[in-house]
Length: 117
Image 1: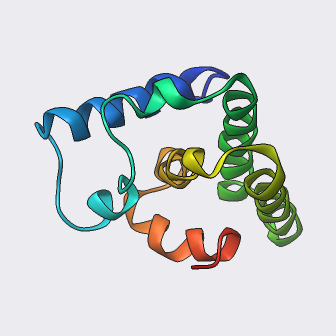
Image 2: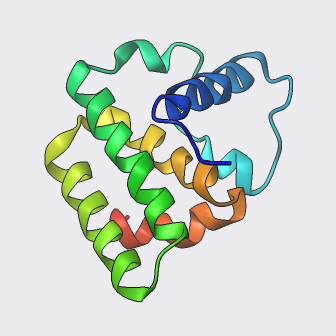
């Protein structure tokens, strides 16, 4: 099944609800990936943030299903979007989107490749 263009927004909103409700909030990789998100964190996103996050979601999907050159290009695009395309307050959303394209355990490995700590 292909991920839809707007599914990323609904997926992130669900993650924010999980954090707010603590109903399904887990320890470990998922807790790390959701760090910085809260129940109303989607409300702070600007129109540009949303468009940049749509691109980031597509890039993580590209990374997950590409050869080495495609994966490197996806990471380069994400780096540029994080630095110049969105507010820093949107970065936790971009980090959580890794798990949408891959798995919660991939977040800790991939995030430092696009945003050094």
